[in-house]
Image 1 (cartoon, one colour):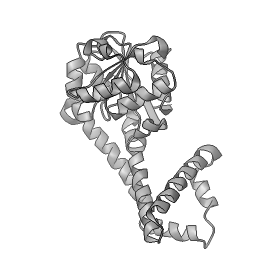
Image 2 (tube, helix red, strand yellow):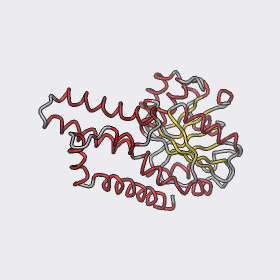
Image 3 (cartoon, one colour):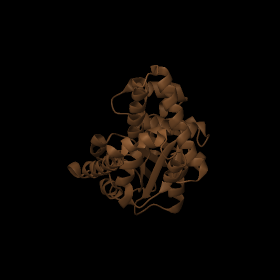
Amino acid sequence: MLKECAIGFIGAGAMAEAILEGLLKRREITSSQVSMVNRGDRDRMSTLVKRYGLEAAKQTIDHVALADVVILAVKPKDAEEALTFWQNRLRPGQLLISVVAGITTQTIEEFVHNRVAVVRAMPNTSCTVGLSATALCGGRAVTEQQFAMAERIFMSVGSVVRVDESAMDAVTGLSGSGPAYIYYMAEALQTAGMHAGLPAETARQLTVQTLLGAAHMLMESGKEAEQLRREVTSPGGTTMAGLEVLRRFDVAEAMKMAVLRAKERAGEMGKRGGC
């Protein structure tokens, strides 16, 4: 499916690189299929050309404009400028995949005059290690084959779910911003371990392995988080004592409010400046 397609990237930041690397590692595509453009950072493009064996002559606006699949991977603040620049350069029949938080398929379709099929994707930064949680939704003109192609692209960097577009801001608040919440928790656990008397590196190692083990238990056991929590919480034991403190400070409510505020912010970003 993808081996016959030219793949273009608008933007060459960390997300674009992670997707590119995943596609190449999984051998979904070859480097000769790729074209990429990045506004004003020639050193960055030179680095990516060398790192992934891209053909230097293909890293141009004209080659991206001719690609079968174009991935829009710019910062939200740059989305309107990018879409304005590309709106008359994209061609009918292309699939445009946006990984820009907060920007709806309808907004993108209006910018490009409904000339291309649009898929909106919300991956997270874990795609850099091939473990992203990515949600996809499609615009009005997307065919099932094109949607399947988008799924295939993001399966190269993790797992994929389809959602209604009305849920995309919630996805952004949960899994899009979620890694930062986990890192915040990891930071707090490591610091707590040090306060309890552990050396910094020991506290870090124990924290990372604990998070990894818990994630694998959730994935492989098939049990709900609540059930697993109950199974490791003995009445009157150490875990129960610790959980009582988390409840006292209403950590669950804080996590809920973090997700809801991030969801709200995604909506605000989508409305700002008409983009």
